[in-house]
Image 1 (cartoon, rainbow, N blue to C red):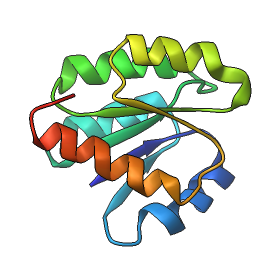
Image 2: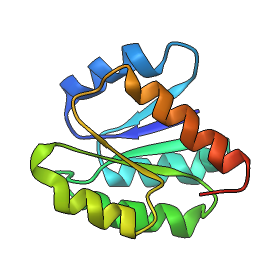
Image 3: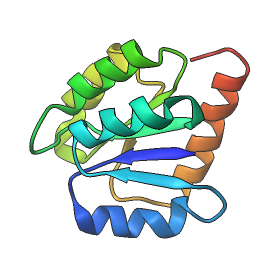
Image 4: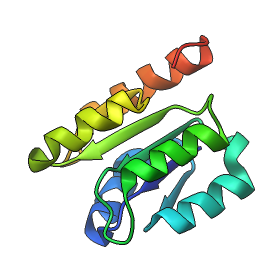
Amino acid sequence: MILLVDDDPRFLQLSESLLARDELVYFAADAENARLLLALLGRGFTVVLVNVELAESSGLELIRDIHWIAPELPVIAIGGEVQTQLLETAREMGAAETIRKPITREWRGILDRVRQGAAAGGK
């Protein structure tokens, strides 16, 4: 299962077609709902994608919380072109990878690589 956290409804809709092809995807529009899903289903997720700049709260805080709740769960930080510094900070905070918007087919390869690394015991 994948958890995608982003507060842009259009982006979530576009992401669904690519990410949900062969896997169950849960969507959270804010950090609070993401934390709730992690509390309920945390061990079932194979990767979490987090927008580093959420309207209601910091995506960086959520990344920190995910590492506290489920340290073995890989996180991929998502950001746009103007969020380079936030993506670098996310990487320093333990994000396994960073991805820039908009969503592309290459995202699947990155997701698979991160999950394979987590399954092999890497971060």
